[in-house]
Image (cartoon, rainbow, N blue to C red; front, side, top):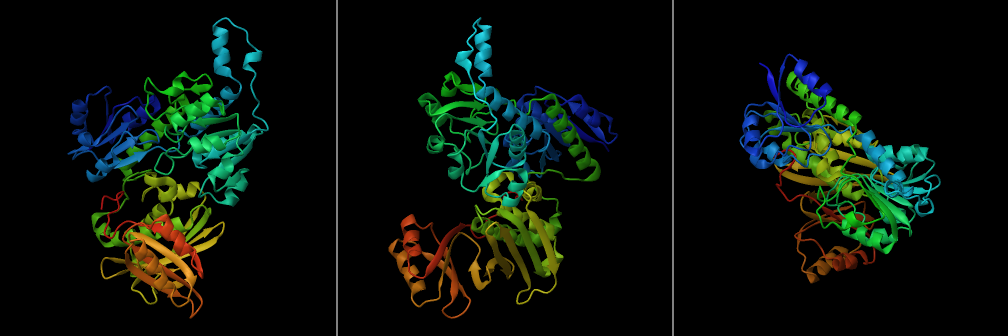
Length: 543
């Protein structure tokens, strides 16, 4: 029986030809559908390919029992309710590679047009003027470009800028120093240290809680007077009102934007009326080549899904049967939490590699799923909701983070043990966890210290010398600040030596409380780690 594939947005002829010519695919091309028409059409479709025009929200996806796959011909899935799709058992896949070069070229084109005043000079000429002195610009050679985010597009921009004889600085919390050096990029772990040196700053990160308003009033003020800003990534990474203020004051000499918080921008958007700004209507992927590449990739993805049962570039679920999931989901949760723990412990240090060891009974289960879950947790701070159990290995690979796993039936003191070691530019951090009974997740080793800590909620990691009274002093400080200790686990090397306490707290400690604890004699370091609450599900698995 043929699989029926619905296409509701413009797709290049090459992509349609792949679908139309395949003997196992029935192609249905319909555009301009109303909400009700789209819901009805999906009732008769096994899969759908869309671009940005079609909105697949929860009300449209609800009750779609036949629909098995959504493929977005492009990177962003903002127009798809991924959570709703997951709940309905629909795989969501995208085409992350096709837009890279076009978006990078758009960035370079806007940067060159901005510094050479191409747009206003053109408008002046069209008005019959000849104002050569008025449009004197700057050359890019010798200028310093700061690239915020060294993913696929950021690296492509950096490589092209180096070809223009620019000095390239890069901010990324996770790419290793060795990889940055190999690319010819001067790497920074602190964006504020980099931004003060940039003649031009360009952003290439996903939009999430960590990157929203990343370039704001304070950071724009830190840039050298006369600097310029470019955003071809996502609207909202650069605060639009703060940028308008900086342009009006003259501190920022110019800006080029291809993306906006609201698209199209609302009529009252202050940036529209600025003279020293270059604006384009989200054209980053709008090249013939990019559109053909994403169309070809989208067509191949959906054909291989139906014909070969292949799940490629999925953003919402892992390829695993229901029976396998029942036996492995607690271990997936354990691996994810260990990843979150070590991701927060290694933040800003540049991750080079990961070594995972599965010991005992867990070694006979689908360890690749656990490795993917661990990687999700490890990179969550950098990538937020973009990373999931399916794409985490790809995301790590793009950042040249080597993730290796090994298994052994020997587990030592535990029935099962997951042990993780993360190598960073500053050394190694490690942790090991197990499951007590059928559901209790435990941290049993942290950087060589043996302990028994809960892997949930708010953790305070308290590194200190093993001296009498320090643990009691910790309790006294938190008691004074009204912070309840739910559980405390202690590990030490030897009597009087280095020790670590992992303290589960019922609420986030105040800055003052942490400051008092950190300032105590014989305390070496205090870290706060935030983990999901006990029993919380994994949203990208729908569990």
